[in-house]
Each structure stands twice: as C-alpha cells, then as structure tokens.
Length: 231
Image (cartoon, rainbow, N blue to C red; front, side):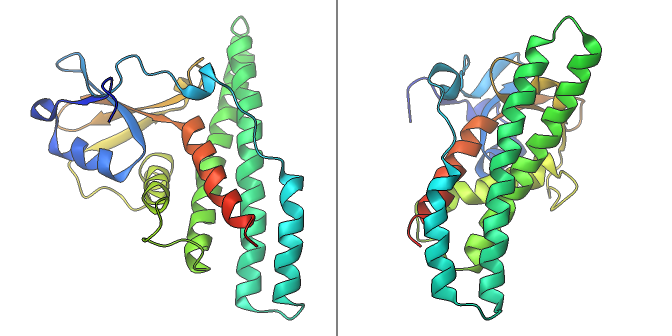
C-alpha cells in the first residue's frame, strides 16, 4: 500500500470499514473529527494528470466475428448471452463517452446556471449508465464462465458491482448496516472526477466517501476488452 494511503481504524466506524471492503471507495472523510481517515488526503485521479482515451471499439469487431462463427447460426441461450454482452459493453462504453462530454460542458458553462444544471443532470444520467451497464457486463461474464473467483480481476468486478448496488441504485441490495447513503450528482461538476457520497448514521452526514468513476470505468474497460480479445 502506498505511503500516502492510510487507514485510521481507531477512528473509523465499523460500517464504514465494511463499506470500503464492499465497494470501490478511494477516500473517506470523517466530518466529526474533520480529517481523512482512509485514502489520500489530496487524492487526484490519475486520469486527470495523465489522460487516456477509450479503447477503439472497431478493433474488437474481428474478435466478435470469430465468436459468432464459433457459435453458429442456431439460437441458443449461450449465443443470446454473448449478444447481450456485445450490446451491454457498447452501452457501457458510450455512456462513459457521453459522461466525459457533458461533464466537461458543465464545468465550462459556469456563468450560465441553466446550462450547468442541464449538463450536470445529463452527466448524472450517463454516470448511472456506466455503472448499470458495467454491472450487466460483469453479470454476463460470470454467466458465460468468462470470469470467476480464481482470477485477479474478480475482486474489482465484485466491488464495481456493489458500488452500483450501494450508491448508484441505492435501493437495490440495500445495506445490512446502520448507515444511509446519499450520492451527490452535483459533485460531478468538478475538475477531479470523484463522486461524493454523504453517509448518514445516527447523525446527518457523519462521513463523506468518494469514488473515482474514471478509474472504475477504465479498469473495467480493460477487464472486458481483454476477455473479448481472446474470442
């Protein structure tokens, strides 16, 4: 673990520790003690310092053609699941592409509050799409036996899915914990791509936790595209 990342377990709520294990949280702020208790205090997404592009989807088309030839023309549930994976990965990809565009627009249009509201809302819609379709891809990878618990990327995929469940679709698979989550779509209008989630327990907004949605997207894009390249 890098030296800049630290965990103050003596100050950390047990439910927050469990939340870190379940999801892709990169930082936790304790609003009572006014300090960062997990992660880098001055965290900056590596995709801001060293921006990268998305994969070229057209470069994967031959891999998909190989898979269709192998599966043949007859309808089977397996073939249908591969079709769902093909579509879900593209929805995942284009949701993020649009998210980047709308997020940049919301930051630029700071002098026009109507446009800020419009672009920031669209950013939130596409962020939900990234996690919704990303989780669908993960579910299909499991269904098709393309990823399992023996593989190093499995734990990240599990945490990506639970980030979607707990923060994006926060009424789905709810916590068996004494906390409530409150993601802020307004936190997307920021130069650093972090989703801020307020955590309420006995008091309101006891903690703020953060998810680097650029990091989550690019990591999952690599996982899925590398599997597709093996078709």
